[in-house]
Length: 337
Image (tube, rainbow, N blue to C red):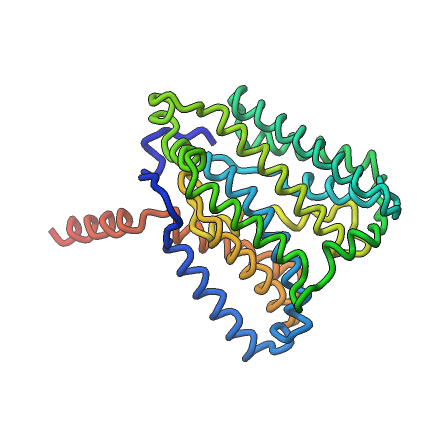
């Protein structure tokens, strides 16, 4: 995934939150999806269905924010399934249903997540390994720990975590509040602080950033560490939302986390990230899954729909359509000459 500076999109860092094309596109897509659901599958947009969808959308949004940080540095994180599953297993198996042991389990899970984030950061930031190879290997190591702790068997979460993560206040699931806070804080740090603007500048052009004295390696490694922290939080919330989560609960979050990043308008080549549109894209993908489920299609079709959404996102924001049009126009001109 090492890309030359000339292949990366230019960036003009500056203060403040900015309106993006991705925000407009994904917002329209969400509106159209809900409209289609109201007409073709009314059960997908009723009150109970939305209450069931929003918690998982919040979990996906948090995981997608972590993936966005990695993608901004020109990488991709394939350790999402292992990270989320490991957080779920530690949160459910270590307390063994005892509320008094929950805090210790959460802290232990956070330390483990940071540790694996450091491993990813060392392998990719300092050792310059390919992000796909490094994170895939770390993901396998995480699953080994998952099997070592759980033996592959599920366990019920504690009552306290079910109330905190799976409860509802003012008609809104608690996980949604967590998701909003995470996205808002991450967006503010990224867009309004010096460190955030440097982070985006390094992702957009690491060679130029290094020439100006910015610690490229440190920022690149930090992206993987913070991503693991967010995957841990997503796993903890997931453990509270689902009364008895499986030991492989994170398997369903790799493709959607990447798709949400791309649909939100963040380029896979790195640079500026769009966290709010990414969160909205998480809602879109969660509701899209519920919509196709209400239509009665198979799991294979739902997976193909997610893949199609990722393909559309890549086509919209990564392909230089102006260059494609110029090339075809040049060919037509040459053919008629």
